[in-house]
Image (cartoon, rainbow, N blue to C red):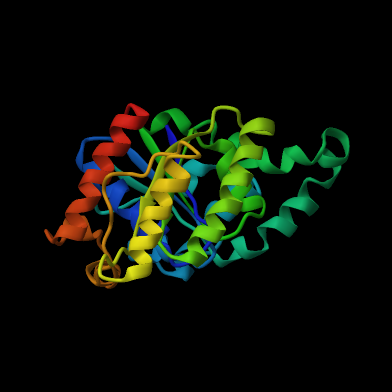
Length: 267
């Protein structure tokens, strides 16, 4: 089962969501692989890795078929929880893929470029109960590869105008991917994150999510909502998931998210 955590806007708790759900699934005795596909390296860094440690041994090298995924996957300090790290080389992946596969694209078409990840992950896909992909905030070849290999997509969304505007674009891309590239892609739903219920525009944003995206588009708004809280930033500094360190309400909300996700995807 592969789940893509995607949102075009940066700073929307994508990495936090992958880290917390990955840890909770591993704690639930599922074998979990987290894939860091953001050149900012945030997920990898949050588990204590440095850029020097992953140089030449990252998801970039798997994409370029220089290394087998098994040679790159790292077991974290937590039982059942594994990581395929990112590197800064990912920032050039779109260009490097186009150059590497130019002859194949000429013969078979550009769709070959968005199915590279599907092909390179195929040998290890069944080795894990759950694969979570942390994507960068864009819709280039990297993100499209993630959408094309995934069974499900979970969309974290801050209930603010800027994030809602990006949400429309992402949903349109997902619609096209589902029609033309990956007919099995399904929505887990939209997860409200960094919520501050005291702020008026957050209340309005939550209402818009329900009125427009749930009632009109039929996309589930998850029951759990993640409040804005410093413990998630603190956990990054401590190199552990917040769910392993704290018992505060925002952290406990991720347990609800995991339970919802588990029921939806049949994990």
